Image (cartoon, rainbow, N blue to C red; front, side, top):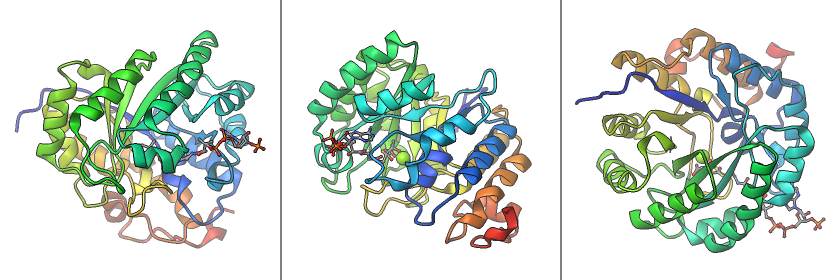
Length: 311
Ligand code: HMG
Ligand code: MG
């Protein structure tokens, strides 16, 4: 194994991807405390919520209030997910400075997730990206189903490249390649990255692994070997997409940090404080946190379902 990466930037997606699929209602102040604790741990990019349809994703319905209440620390970035112009309007009203737009390499997944085909999503995102640029808002892109789709099965890597390149053409500063349902494996990830990096600079790619089959750490190593330096992860290993049946949590941020520490790669995050952040959200969930390192660090004692702990 040969890894030449010195430093990784972690994009914490716990407050958005981590919570969007949770059944339990999580109070506004708990979401805010979770984000503050994540930032306290040294995570400088924290995806804080989503301006998606509140009926389709009720857990994100209070994203405007969450964004209003969090401390916008200098040098920190709090991207918000935006699916269309209506979402961008809501973002602008809140004074958001950074958004993420999202489409997929699978036509069927896109239709279920955002009620649009791939081409249609670009018709919708083109004015969103232009307006965002005029407003001085940074735009990140996501490509879902990069390693496989819950509806279509295998996805051609060439399709992932095409969609990624189109997001770059819209002006995204970075595109996050999503293994939405956690079906990817290391050699597959490396094959995909070999193709993508023929066209797209490595420095503008991020990897977004869900850990459904326990492959997230292995896939991260595979991507590190090919020089990727940006990884999305979710505190406690929370996560999942309501429109991706079978998808489970993201790469746990603690697992990522532990892996990077073992490789001597800098990341700027304090593991103890990160575990403390996970313990803010744990009592509000109706299940234990799935992340391996957070379980080991707390000896499995995080008190999920005991809400009084943080009240
Ligand atoms: P639609 O129903 O097709 O929207 O939903 P529409 O444009 O036809 O409008 C219908 C109504 O919705 C209208 O209201 C609009 O105003 C309203 P009416 O006139 O009937 O009263 N509306 C909105 N309201 C609030 N906010 C908005 C908005 N847009 C329209 N932004 C839409 C289309 C995209 C909105 C919907 O399908 C949606 O919200 N989808 C989001 C699904 C989602 O959040 N999925 C999870 C995130 S993606 C993910 O997790 C993957 C990722 O992690 C990477 C990976 O893992 O691969 C990123
Ligand atoms: Mg995701």
